[in-house]
Each structure stands twice: as structure tokens, then as C-alpha cells.
View 1: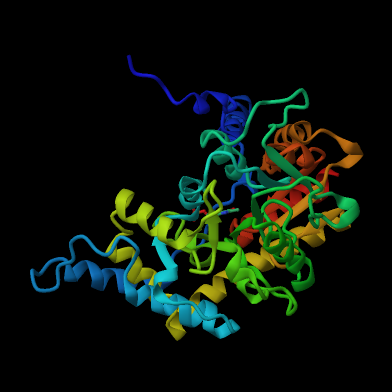
View 2: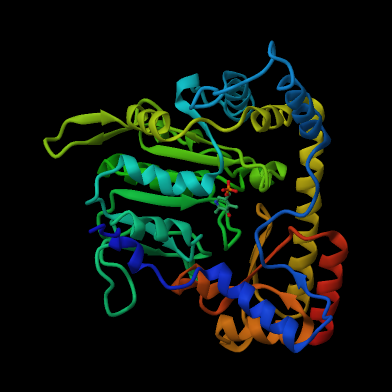
Length: 409
Ligand SMILES: *Cc1c(COP(=O)(O)O)cnc(C)c1O
């Protein structure tokens, strides 16, 4: 008799983003022909940088000839891409990494979940609240969540509150945590941490032998000078932080899939006997056993964004999204909403009027204006009373949606 992994049964029946889709579909039935504008989903809208397209076309041509054909590549990624990442994303910010500390993968969402494989079951997981729902789901599916208590919270997960009164900056937990997920600039609040704020977490991790999983999916959107792009800009972080980054939002690779995970040699975990083990070794073993590498063509595409022309092209897209975000911020704040984030991030985090529950606000906005936002409740208990709007749609749609909201309020 085959038994199931019962951890999967602990998950909520629905995935948050599926529920939003269902509500949009219901709206289409009620209002056929409505011109729906989606300012909710976290996907990009602008086409791929031409440099990346050209590089991938060339790479595809190589596959046509036996002499230049590429079969299985290195599971951990090609050196040509890893070297570009180290030079452009790290050396340029004073961080040194060796090539075997960077692992190329096919998306940071999967790595956020997969990284759990190299940790023991009994770690206490710290996640900020509100946050990207994948961290909590991964902890549940990995059997690390414990039991659900009366407040609908998991016993082995420490929820680190981020609230308006402290500017959505996370405070160090009172309880001991072993693995901490941090995502900055944050999804959904759009808030970034400066060096002093991030250093507190690095110091905490070092003092407690904890490991930080740092999700830097939005690092390319950082504008302010005092905001670190990488956690390794903080002294000591190479001893306690795994950084996960993606080409998805940076370069429009959401449909192509390419990301990377940095696991420095200095990070160790412990056996029950107190023996220190290099996490890099375990992650390398995991990748080489379960993965056969991100495809060659896509890695050539990712490499091309580091050329001067490629950089110019992706920068143009990022500025385009940030301009949309600024339009959203200004319009909503002039319309009387309280807005957060959206400066170093494409996400704007907004208080619902009259403390309206976020799903009710979502429904009302959709019904009255055909504009889709993301209800904050989907990001955790701390997201209730807020909604998220992103700058990822086209300029035209963003302006149109803002017009509708201005007339609506
Ligand atoms: C979009 C996003 C990612 C990127 O996921 P990919 O799988 O690389 O496309 C990672 N983390 C957060 C918080 C995100 O919003």
C-alpha cells in the first residue's frame, strides 16, 4: 500500500493566486466584455531584451551542428554565466565569490523550496509576516511546520511581524529561530532594508548559528544609495546567508526560467553531535543528484544581459516599471490612500480605506472599476487590511487603471 506524504495534506485547499483567478473569472461572467486591468499579478509585461533574444538565437543555431551541439551541461551551471554573475553582481559591490559558490537554476521559486532538502527536519523556521507565501508552504510541505494552533499559525514557524508602526521593518524575534527567510526589497510591502537594518539580522544569525535564506528577486529595482543590493555587503554574511536571485523580474525571464543561488563555503550547519558541515557541499550534492542543469540556450540568454548593450536594455525596462510604480504611488496617495513601498521596488503596499477587509476591498474594486489588485490577506495575517498594486503592467494600462480609481473614490 502506497502511503502519501501527509505534509501535503496540511496545506490550505487552494493556492492564493488560484482564488484570485476564480474571482476574476466570476467577474467576467457577471460583466461580459469588461476591460479588466490586472495590477495584481507579479509577472512582467515588457518583451525580452533584444540582446538576450539574439544570444539565444545564436545558441540555438549551435545546436544544429554536431561540432557546436550541447548535450548535458554542468548540473551547477556553465562557467561563462557564473563568471559574469560574480564579476557584475558581486565584485562590482566589493564581494568576492569563487565559481563553485554560485549555482545556476531554473527559477528562485523552486530553489526556495528545494533548499529545504539540505536542512534537518527539526529546525525552527522564521518568516516575516506579511510575506511571499512560498516560504511558509515550503516549510509545511517539508514537514517543518509542526501543528496548526488555535490562531491558525504553525507551532514550528516563528512569525516575525512587520507592521505599519515600525515601517514594515522586521524586529528580531524573541524566540530562537534556526532558519530565517528574508526577502528585500520585499514582496509584498515594497520596503527595502538599509545596511544597519540588515546588519541586525546578520549579527543575530551569527550569534545563534542560524542561517538566513535571502531572497533578492527585486535587487535590481533598488534606487537609494544606502540600500545594500546583496546581503554579502554586510560583514559576516558569508558565514550565515544563502542568497537566491532570479533573472525573472530583473530581465523578464519569467517565461524562460533562470536564477541562481549563492552558497558560500563558510556557511556551516551542524549534526546532532555538534559536528560542523559545509552547506555548499550538501547543496552541490543535491543539485548534481536531482538536477541536470538549466538549459544551455537560456544560460546564453542570461549571459547576454551582462553585456553593455544588455545592461542598457534591462535598465530601460526596470525604469519603465518604476515609472509605473511612481504613477501608482502618487495617484493613490493623492486619492487619499496611505501608501508604502514602491520606491526601491515595483510593489506598492496600500492600506484599505476604513480598515476594510482586503478580500472585500479587492471584490469592490474589481466590481466597480474592473481593476485587479492583490488582497493583502494572501500574504499572511499581517497583510489583512492592505492590498498590493504592482508597476508591472503597461504604461497605458497603468494610467487607465489610475484614472478609473481616481474617479471611483
Ligand atoms: C517573482 C519572485 C521570485 C522569482 O521567482 P522565479 O521562480 O525566479 O520566477 C522570487 N521571490 C519573490 C519574492 C518573487 O516575488
